Length: 297
Image (cartoon, rainbow, N blue to C red):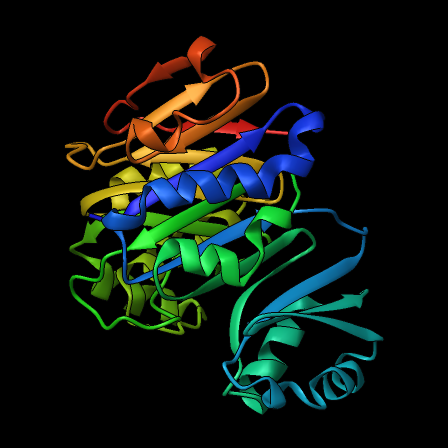
């Protein structure tokens, strides 16, 4: 019953409008996921500068973190705050090393995502309130993915909200459920993957990260997922420069794609797309079952 929205811009003129457009799309999916919501924004980058988005409801818990992290990774660390989240920026840093240090030294801080371009914000609450809390409308970028969650098998928590990110500049949102996630989680843990939750969507994200770490592109990893993931699902996935969609072979979860010369958009329902500029001239279609759709900058 969850709601997914996504927007991949082709026209640079629309980049300042990305947050506003996504916020409006997210609002239409509110009743499909009133428990919690989240979004990933792929914004500006400075080559060689990594960003880590962290979450903690008590901002005082961030005191001293930038200094300690800087010493650990031997880099200058800058930090900006947005609601319950903070974005730490560091130059010339091994992201895995930084992630490991933060997990071990500051377990009370939750890692939302990491990469040169991605920032992830998610919280418990109605989607419009979550978007307002983080001033989504003021954000810009090249592409973004959003999710509204109706929890069915796990608790309503910030960490249970989507998107999930397990690799650099990667994220995934999901409508559905996986039946083999426990076995996959065990296999991925043996490969060294660390999990923050028991959510099946995090397993799907980690699976794709594992496949891409082995040299597959996003499109290839999504193709492989059709062989290895069991269940009912629609995935929308983001990478540093890419945007992908795939549905399981039965495709019982609703999904709509639209494409114009200016953008590619995804919505669980068409009403999520109805307010986009030029939608009346867009090619609109329902993604086919067991078919990978992928766009890259």
